[in-house]
Each structure stands twice: as structure tokens, then as C-alpha cells.
Length: 386
Ligand SMILES: Nc1ncnc2c1ncn2[C@@H]1O[C@H](COP(=O)(O)OP(=O)(O)OP(=O)(O)O)[C@@H](O)[C@H]1O
Ligand SMILES: [Mg+2]
Image 1 (cartoon, rainbow, N blue to C red):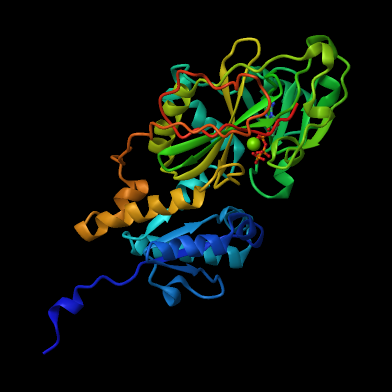
Image 2 (cartoon, helix red, strand yellow; image 1 turned 120 degrees about the vertical axis):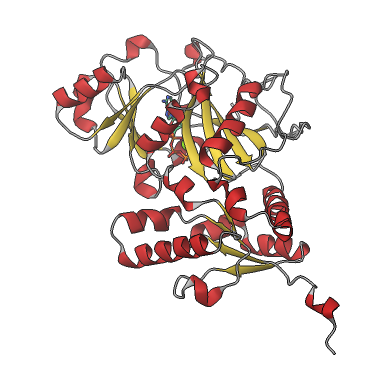
């Protein structure tokens, strides 16, 4: 007679993953594999040349399919087939934990959609956080652009960003200072009012219910008198604030014009991660924040899917702990569909109450993180090296 006990031994969990070749290197897939195995699970790379069905089972899927999703939306038939197959699989396997759900990610593929979503959150409506005024521009006609700007209270100078938020073209941006510069608008794009912010960007890296704050160089301020005749400045956003960007002419203020960036109000960030969790059902995302030197108000200027986590130690461990925790309740019959966020009642676990400042903070004598911070894992790795 076969032992009934042996039938009850749970099989090892399979964690599927898909990243582009570039992201695979960045994430360090071998490290992820080792971490997955340390949890007694098996990492399985999804192969888009086969169907999901042919590769199952998947207890969880960790991925960044943004580029593939954009290709699918732009009419690439193979990409369309891949994404549909993943969507169908997830629809038919509600117990598969997905980091992160495709519908949530889809909302972040277009900057205008993202900004509208952020503008509509309680957070922005009650003034905890802000979003610079923005207008969706679809025409090159000067009068049309001016009308869109007027209707949405967008002022000169503004940052002109392509509406598509992923892929190399999406990082080509410009700062437009006056009417003459409107010939440089490249629709479809978003015109977003430029905020003087002391050339300092706060990158908030969120992993489930924890977050890290990293400071980065950012575009320098522009004084009011420099605006009238200023020619359009074209830049690639990757040269401004990415992990390996050092200060350049565009991110170094004139000596007589140095302004200290206001500190980050971390209580607002606590509220933000909670609300975006409810709104977006996302686990792995980044939010870029700048603080106005004139008003101290904090502005969200960007939300990124599965960002680089540069300067965040152990983010893969935190991610896997989160995934394994999400897999636990399945044995108790709680479906992952509910956990993945399609249910309105997604649980928010309390944010960790420890704070670990990295010792290599090297810029401000007092790092501009408000000391009253209660929550969040904050690693203030400061790369701005002024
Ligand atoms: N409204 C704004 N006011 C002032 N500076 C801004 C504004 N929007 C963007 N910037 C500057 O431009 C940089 C790039 O902007 P943004 O984060 O939107 O681009 P991105 O290409 O989506 O960036 P990422 O590398 O995070 O994907 C920011 O890091 C910041 O320095
Ligand atoms: Mg950004």
C-alpha cells in the first residue's frame, strides 16, 4: 500500500521569470537563482518561443515585460502573441503570484496616463504630494500647443517628455523655455512645468511594503531672467540621474545660484507607498520626487516599473521574501488573484520601522531626509558628489 503521507509532501515551488537581455544582467539572474534556491524553490526562465502551458507549472512569476508589452501595443505580432499567452495563463491560474500584474504595469507605460493617475490620487488631491502641471501635446502647431498649455496651466519652462515611458526613445527629452522653442516639441508628448528643485532628485525604490530613498543628481535650476531667450536644451534622461551619471554642466548649478534642495518629507512617502499599493497593486516600482526650492512642495515627476535599484542592498532578497510570503497562504486556500491585487481589499502590511542610512552618504552635511521619519527602510546612498 502506498504511503498517504508521501502524497502530502508539497512539491517545490516554481518561480518563473522573464527579463530582457539587458535587464537580466542588471538584475543578476544567477544571484536571483541562488536566492530562489535558498528558499527551496526553482527559478525557471520563461521562454517566449514556447507557450506558457508548455512550460508550466508556475507558482509565481517575476518579470519586467514592459518593452515586450510596448512592442505588442505597437503591432508586433509575436510580442502580441507572447503577452496574450501570459495574460491567458494568469487568467486561468489565479493562484500564480505575479510581480507585477500586467494591467497595473500597462497603466505606467504611457506618461500621460501615469500623470493623470497620480493627479487623481487622494495624495495629490489632499496636497500631501504634488505633480507638476502637465499637458498632453499631439500637435506641432504653435497655437494648439499654447492652448493646451493654457488649458492645463503649464508654464515656461517645461520639460518635454515622449508619452511612451519605456525604450530608448523615451529618454530623449528637452527643456523648452519660450514660444520660439515650441518648434522643438515632438508629439505625442507631455509638456510638464519645470520645477526649480536644487538639482537634487530623490529616487524612491519600493519593494512591496518597504522602500529605499537614494539621492541623485538632477537638472539644475534656471533663474527667471535666463528664461526669455534661452534656446531649447535637449538631453537624455539617462545622462542626468541614472546610477552611473556624475554631475555635468546640466546638473551643476552656477556658483552664484546654488540652492539647497528642501528635505524629503518621509511621512508623505509612507502615505504614497500605501496609496500607490492600493491604486496600482504594484510590488516593484520606483518613484522620482523633487522638492521645490520656492515652496518646499514635493512633486512626483516619474513612476518606473521594476527600476534599477542601484544603491539598494539586498533588493532581490527582499523581493523573494515577499514572493515566498505571498505563496504561503495558498496552502490555506487564499487565492493569489486576491493577493495580486485584483481584489479591492489588498492588505497593506505595516512598513518596517527601522532606518538604515548608508555610511557612504557624502554630499550634504545633513542629508536632506527629514529626521522625523518613522517608517520605511531608508538607505540614503548619495551619489550626487557635488
Ligand atoms: N518637471 C520637472 N521639473 C524639473 N526637472 C525635471 C522635471 N521632470 C524631469 N526632470 C528632470 O529630468 C530627469 C528625467 O526625467 P524623468 O524621470 O521623467 O525621465 P525618465 O527617462 O523617465 O527617467 P528614468 O531614468 O527614471 O526612467 C529627472 O531626473 C529630473 O532631473
Ligand atoms: Mg526618472
